[in-house]
Image (cartoon, rainbow, N blue to C red; front, side):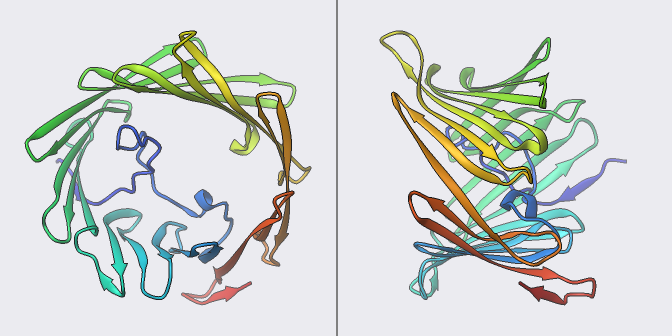
Length: 308
């Protein structure tokens, strides 16, 4: 029998050009550089604060951006078990809900054949409506997206090509290339290194690219940013970043190269006394900027967090 679940998946927006995510996934404590049974994490920023709340499964259930006492943005995620059933993005201005910029997302999944996910997007003032359908193949890979809004319908096709140790995923919007992602892996003396090259296109023409390499535990080792130079018809390097980690795997330094200029940023972390050791203060030099976090944990008892 076909199964139909109504849920909403958080779309981790890795593709601003396309306006949709490349992979459907939940946000968890790991996505916020957190470990253990975290209940809440409050980050103090120069514009206010960010508060992230998690359930006992480690899934994000609420995030709040507080600009001042009257202005805030709140995103709420509702689950059935470990399935998200609804996402609401609410914007408050002068202490009141702004219905024109607040949105609700609802998803339905059909598994009678290859998986199909249908997303419905509605604004709180009922003025905005969009429908997106995500189609998957036998290997559960995203292969197509249909977006319907007002009188327009856009079709995105996702193609996969495997060659030796490389896999290339290409997004084509109404037949025109928008993005390509090439992933490859190789082993060296330090272990396996994964390289991800992402190219962006506008009207089918290349515009920019980013190449990232990852080492053990998915730690970012290097990042190279390119811009397409039409005068030489190829990509040119704009910036290069190299990360250095200490023996405990903690980021200690970033080496940045821009043209002939090379400079470094060093990081100093202060950790809490929790068993999983999350950082609560990060200092960046020579900028002398810092970020502080207040972390609250679940204990083994039901809904009884401990603070650090």
